[in-house]
Image (cartoon, rainbow, N blue to C red; front, side, top):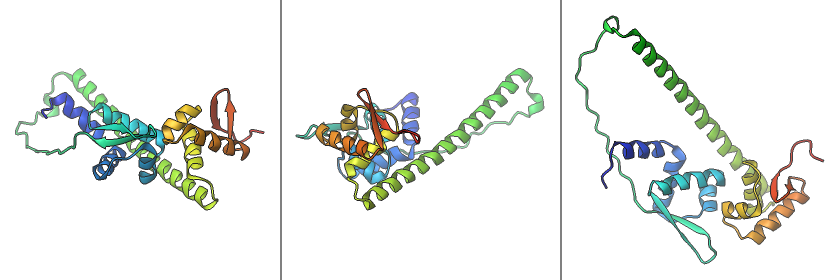
Length: 207
């Protein structure tokens, strides 16, 4: 497949994320559904769905439905990238010979903004790792307490914002009735409460 400069830039941006690369590596082994990917990579279901949608839009993967209407994702196009670095032979113009000082100042400002952006990306990547570790800790604690896997997946999904039953069923890949039972159990435990049709994690001072 031929890719122009825009396609290549977009593809490199997609593959620049570690978790998207991990998803691709996992799907090289076998097709998986959202909850399975989330558990294997210890990444939140919502984040997995966001990554899958981006990979699907790039035509890297597709999905098929099983008899339970659960989406199984698989690679539609595998990826192989070769990078050829070539030295650019050109004269370096000394700074004192740059006549357009306004242009130079703008370039320096742009350079500073790019550096700030890169630092923010490093911080976000660190936070993503902390979030993944916390999700893993919650899953292990829930298992030790005898909580069901689905109940923990529902609770973790709600950490990322209020959701209704339909959205939770799609996020976890579980049947709506099973999700409803998990929600009722979490409400009885005082972990989750319902507002309208939306469920959310209780605040620290909720009665």
